[in-house]
Amino acid sequence: MISTHQFLAGAYHPPLGGSLPAEFLAATNVSDAGHPSTKNLRILLALSFIPFVVKINPSGKERFLMSTVTNLTVPKSFPPFNLARLLRTVFQPNAAERVAIFIDLDDPHQVKDFGFLKNPSLTIQKHAYEVFYQGLRNGGLKELNLTGGDFFAYKITGGSNLDLPDLAVTPEGREVSLEKDVYPNYKLILCISTYSATAPLTAFAKQYGFRGATLHGLNETILSSGLSVDYDEVSRNAEKLRLGMTNADWVEIDFSCNGEKHTLRLDLAKQEAQKSHGLCRGGPDIANLPAGEIYYVPTGASGAFPLKYEDGTIGLMTVQNGRIIAAELIHGNEQTIEEHRSKIAGDPATGELGELGFGTQLLPVSGRDIQDEKILGTLHVATGRSDHLGGHLTPDKFADSKNATHDDILFAPHKTPEIQVPQVRIHRNGTTEVLIENFRPAPYMAKLLS
Ligand SMILES: [Fe+2]
Image: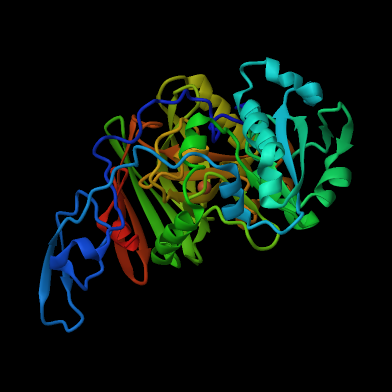
């Protein structure tokens, strides 16, 4: 059988050092004040590949020709990470709310006396301890007027969004029940883990009335970029994109791989587009951090797309009625394809396309999908569980609950250099618009950000 994390979000590719390709240029906010020739015009966020923008003034009589306003690459630096600022922006916490930090470990008892810190490979868990636990204990709780700051470890699930075990262990070595002792007694839960826990934690948040955030795969790059941005601004930009992408009939993605062209069509049935925007200020919910994504749960899908597996093998997936029904080898290991075929045959829900997502942020590549899928110009589909996104596919609909993962399949230049995406089109309000070309937002998408 294919492993449950065959195309895992947050797979541990080493950070690639660079960021987006040099030609990846994007938009910026520019004040009108510095551009007298465009006074009284709202300056558009402009992309380098938009040569000029023609605007008609409100009277309709005069035309202004603006050259490209500004090219903005991914910022070279971000504000320093500030835990209190991040939590304040994301949650706007209420006074005295009690906060807990979760990590995952092969043996959760290794949390006793923070013994896991001796293992240098546990970098995610170390960040959870040093940045979040110590950050809260050493002033963060006081600054935010929060209580708790308690630390719990659970046994690693082994797959993206698999259900969480109930047993957790405290640094004192005490075993506790998450459902009896933790979920009912905390108002904010920060889960900093190896595998995504967004789906199960969202279900528990709604059941027990807490809020939280999942930060699986946390690394240095993410801390110093995707977690250092202003989430009020991320949220505003996500909403601008969402408004121009909502109520769509379908999205078509053209792929080119190994000299062949393929198209995947995802039916959206005019659904309200959703956004992962990082703010979790209302009722029980879980934010995925870094955030910055527009997403849908497709109502159907058809066509074909190339999929790159963890071992580098590339297969061609045939999609019918919303599910992958066949996999053929394009390049690599036939055994990998055979294992995938047998998984789909034994548990067809694992082939269901449960998400289509588009990044909205200007961020550097982190080597972890949790951030890299939020980069503007990238796109991802996901197979499997979709209940945390409002979809129908719950774990009980899988033949084996161990297969109830949600596996993001990210298409991005750094991750899938063998797979080109010449064009992504969206059809809404009777019009087809080009959304993305070669991993760069096309003018329609760029203008949404104005
Ligand atoms: Fe997504």
